[in-house]
Amino acid sequence: MSQLLDLVGIFVFALSGALMGVRKRLDVVGMMVLAGMTALGGGVVRDLILNVRPAAFQSVGYVLVPVAATVIVFFWHPHVARVMPAILVLDAAGLGLFCAVGTEKALEYGLSPLHAALLGVVTAVGGGMLRDVLAGEIPTLLYDRQLYAVPAMLGSGAMAVVYSYGIHGWPATLSAAVLAFGLRIAAMRFKWRAPLARGVGE
Image (cartoon, rainbow, N blue to C red; front, side, top):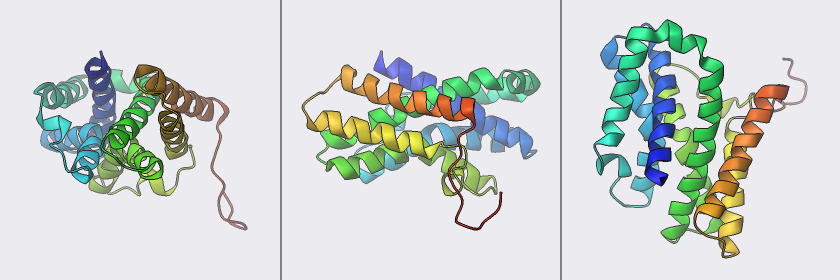
């Protein structure tokens, strides 16, 4: 079940990467690179930091899912763009899932709660950051006006706290993922924004 949810999150992130490729007028190869980086980049960085074989290289599904997302966007990107509100909801779910799972894996490998939470954030937003850099955009992480990284930080922090109190397994993961998901949805719904420096206009 956990792998299925992981693949769903990868698929949604890959869609956003491929759509970025369309907006940047990239060819199918460029679209596929952005899709793969967005979907798998954060998890690969996490696993490399943990000095373990990246999960993306242990199952063919992790490679095929971004390819499938790219094919869908390549042929039907106007339709995919029209259902972006639904995709953004799934993206929020993927954000919550990845920050919780990334934090839990880091804790299982012996990292401190603080470092594990940071690595959970990397898992959730690292792929999007790599996508933005490759596409020539300022990474969203550096101007988080739409509160994307902040929900991941709070979800990862919650995961580290409950794990430290001995609550492991799916109850802990689900709780942290739902927290991050709820905060991201609320930020989109109510247009919450992170503050700019004092004196800087919108």
